[in-house]
Amino acid sequence: MKSTYEKLFEGNRKWVDDTLARDPEFFEKLAKGQKPPVLWIGCSDSRVPANEITGTLPGEIFVHRNIANMVVHTDLNMLSVVDYAVNALQVTDIIVCGHYGCGGVIASLGKKQNGLVDNWLRNIKDVYRLYQRELDAIKDKDKKANRLVELNVMEQVLNLSKTSIVQNAWAKGQPLSLHGLVYDLRSGILNDLETTISGQSDLPTYYIMDAELAVH
Ligand code: CO
Image 1 (tube, protein in one colour):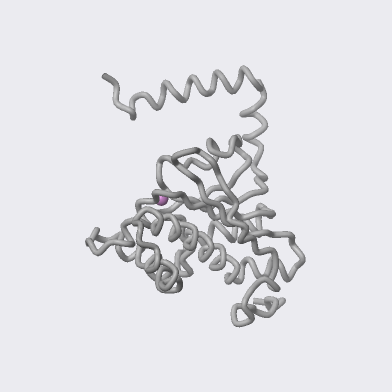
Image 2: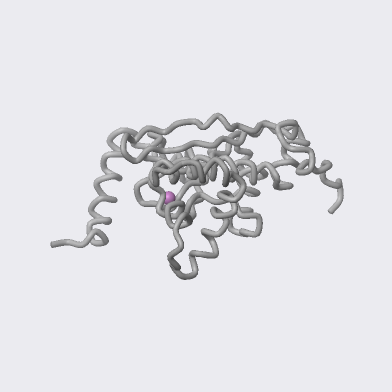
């Protein structure tokens, strides 16, 4: 029996054939460059692939994924992706997409050590701390985890808005909205958490920075 790895190439050739049958110039057009209007920051979970669950094609979404869709201020990888997406690609929307049943969020609720990843998951515990009263009151384990998934997405959207990258784009008058979504693995449905931030006025004043210096 073939392994999943070995089947990747068969799957790829079939996808190429199907894609060319629909649009013979598909790859030619894409090879010229990309101008995706959306940046997606999602979980690495194999069940939440950005393009498939949104019915989008290659070229339509710029994607960054990590465990539990985090926006951590010291993460140079994430910051580089956001900077490139905002300043070079000029995306108009950034999505942080979480999902119910997220292993990272569930692990952050436990006491078990999981190794290096615990340092990453601690950022989720810090979200718990902000909403401790609400979360402590939820006795059902799954409901508690699901609510933390939502609150975590909201906090990561807020984290994006705190960056100089996003605030400088707003200062320049560049249209840029930050959205929080949650995906339900059980139904396949993607919902907007209605936590969209579209400008500095949506932020607490202590996070607002002046426009960047002209020379730097
Ligand atoms: Co996850």
